[in-house]
Length: 309
Image 1 (spheres, rainbow, N blue to C red):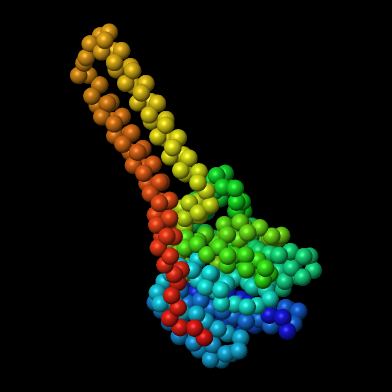
Image 2 (image 1 turned 120 degrees about the horizontal axis):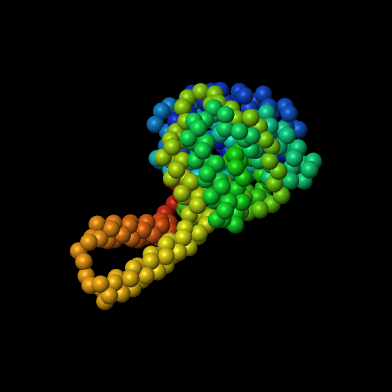
């Protein structure tokens, strides 16, 4: 029997796990006879997530597996660990909070088997229920990254998708430490189809994604898939140099014609502070890329497994 491996990252999800498993079990009869195995990735949870996974695994040891990290390494590490662990003919990624509609899994399978796609993913039609400020910055992020990157990332696309083994193998070849899965899924290519759905609320519990975490994640995505910020920093440096050169010529000519004057010291200080701020901004942009290079060269493991069953 062919197998679908389902990767489910978990971080402080003790309330959602008991709801997730029975919901997916109801979908199994619609999967054309495919065996469904679960791979839960406990990403260093501080609540009873691991206990819930151990209970679930003891109830169904043949189909339920879990990997528990030694600490929190982030969702990207959890996804990568799951992709390395599974061996199914098809591989799916799904959030445990049931915001990803499980009832679309049979349609995703049909998209691969009947229509010949390599990847069938999902895309939210809207962000109903989210704070407006978060929706605004999310839309802004997708506009920016698609302007400056050659890798197109559609607005509203989720990690929830079903992939062939060939796609998974291609993703595993990208073993970089700094990971942005939405970009990686798009970068590897392959024939892809997206199913749209209305935004859903969490089944239980609270999200661990704060505004600051999402902001840092978006910066990581821009740095990983575009070098445009470096070009912007170079342009700012060149522009500042030209303005300073023009100002210097003006000051020299004025000194020769009308003589020196104490007047204008406030504007001069403002200009110095502004140029200094631009320099620090450019150094920060360059430093972000150098920091990523530094982490890559250290060759540290992306995650550390404490327990696996």
